[in-house]
Amino acid sequence: MVGPARPLFVLFGSSIVQLSFGDGGWGSILADLYARKADILLRGYSGWNSRQALRVLHHVFPKDSAIQPSLVIVYFGGNDAVLPFPSAQVPYVPLPEYVENMKKIAIHLKSLSEKTRVIFLTAPPVSYALIKEKLSEEHAECRTLESCRKYAEACKELCKKIDVKCIDVWSAIQKRDDWLTSCFTDGIHLTAEGSQIVAEEILKVLEEADWEPSLHWKALPIEFGSPTKLSPERQWSRKKKNGP
Image 1 (tube, one colour):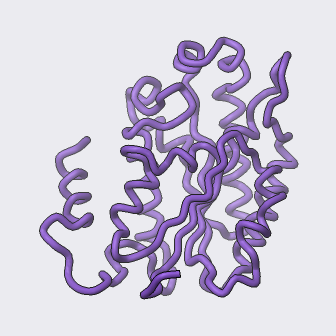
Image 2: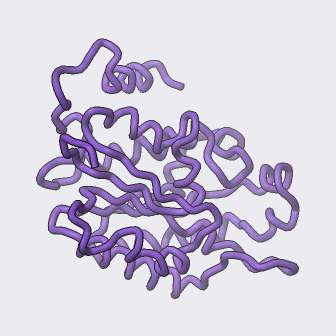
């Protein structure tokens, strides 16, 4: 561990998380904004579902760790919602089990420390045409918009019951008129445009949350001095003003 100690953010999930540190990814956007303010760790596992996440939860987030995260952003659901393939094993998890798994994940994370905050991301929508073009028709038939909607709604309802912040990625992405063609690389995973939507929604939650201390990037101190002319804060403000 190197110092000085900073707030620790952990991104925990499947491929939407694993790929988030790529060029223009929402994880890389956060890492850029929080440079000199917080350490952001990636714990993303491509192809995983909530069942697999639950099995390793205590290994990834041990309760006896000397340093506990200030924030954990969790994404599972897209793989859970995949309808069973006729000819292959899939990561499908029945909806009631998915809800129970996510509840157990939230309870464990909230128990790590009094100041550990949790945000859940819902499953995003999917683009049937892109999945069919980039992957296969079988994949397109099994990753349906309706199935993702059900899991996204279930995640939202769970978060209301257990007092966890929830970002409705399903709805946020569909607010963009051209989301079917602009927000996905393959109909499932996010482009830079899709990632920017996710990053903006996360930052909105962090700004509006009545957490003490605040975890929004504007509220955190800059380590060892003042921002430079090319600071992430100014780059982000300029990017939002001028558009992608």
